[in-house]
Image (cartoon, rainbow, N blue to C red; front, side, top):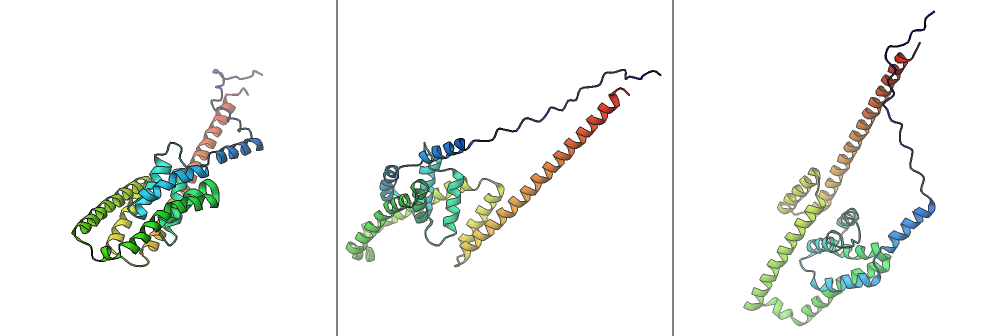
Length: 254
């Protein structure tokens, strides 16, 4: 009884074994990373140095202030105070709350570094110059502001134009930093058009809610596509493994 063997040797299995799982992180490593992140926070002196001058030089209104925060503390900072994602979350939270967003952001910037006391320091230093100047203006220049002369009217007109330019520049900077996908760009353009032609009390909350619903739906659809691709990849890998096993069985001596 002759034993039949294949003419060709069995081909080795080309599938490489999966890589070993990474070793679990020790609690000491986690605590060390947390301590390093804690040490990278700005000090009270850094917060005071950043906001003491900014309160006197930030013109243009809330939109310009938010753009200035993004440029100074995130985008162009040698040591960013936070990531762009964290800044975007704070901006979204401020937009969903009543009141000027720049005021809320001025407090939030300090809170992220030194807690509530840091927020009081950053927000107070950013707000008090406007309080002083508006108080002095209202007390000492009421008549000039109500009945301005020619020179003063020309001066205020120039200041208004410069403020409008700062707002446009800040809006462009925020749009470029926040709207990075086709969906967010379309939402940005739609919101700009609608808010320009329609002025109602519930317009901005409606636009915020609409934008949130659209992005949530997009994220859900993206997650479904990723799961489908993963399932197809797993099915293809299982089919390939089954085919390799069948080939090995056929090539094995009987």
